[in-house]
Amino acid sequence: MSTVKIVTDSTADIPKRVREQLGIEMVSLKVMFGEESYLDAVSISNNQFYEKLIASSTLPTTSQPSPVEFLETYQRILQKHPGSPIISLHLSSAVSGTYQSALLGSTLLEEPSDSDITVIDTKSASYGAGMLVVRAAEMAAAGKSKEAILTEIERLKKDKKLFFLVDTLEYLQKGGRIGKAAALFGSILNVKPILTLDDDGEVTAVDKVRGTKKAMQRIMELFKQEFGADPVEMTVAWTHKSEIALELAALAQTHLQIRNIRQTEIGAVIGTHVGPGTAALFINRV
Image 1 (cartoon, rainbow, N blue to C red):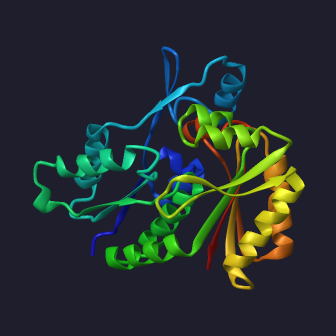
Image 2: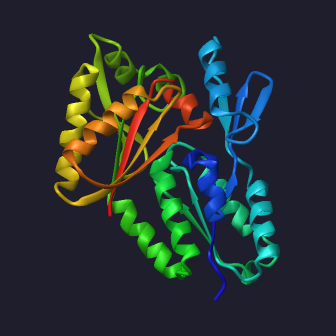
């Protein structure tokens, strides 16, 4: 049996060492500051990006990979590993056309009958997608079948939850990822919206709390409602500065039965839309 190969895009925010260790192929999105274009997680580091973002008077723009870029990735894998099934997992189609590009790229192979490519819309972003990719890659490395991996991906999609806090809603509003009314409300009287991605993969506010400390406590209540005393894994993520995220993670350790903890930094493309000072927790049932 040929080993299943795993493909994702750069918005999954999987640390490079993990990608290399598990053999995960990555196709990068792009971030543009005016005429300057960078490959996310390749030609610009997170530190360089956030320094430029904070200094910039205008919001950078982002763009998805082309179908041809995905086609070339699939071709490279199949040339090196003929007959291997490919599972390609991507950023929510509600916020990006990346999934559609990957899907189209998979149809452009000259001999589609000789290929076995499954393209998945994770309905999530950052490590909400990354946790699915990593689990799939771990199972592939253990020799699990494509069918077993797809079954586990579907289970994990239902057994995970993410909440995040942003320093300001300005970036989400400017990028068209959240309505102007919500952005306005978030700027008044230190109200902190607690954000998530809904079942369709769209950014939505689940509650609005005055002050960061109270928002953190409310996030713990929401996680407890979801997971209770079940054992879980947790990934903490942040943009630019980690203090709030690590404080949130420490609080989670006093409320949840956490068996494994990961850390990651949110990269340039997602960072463009949430801004510096974002703190996120991604939790899944073991």
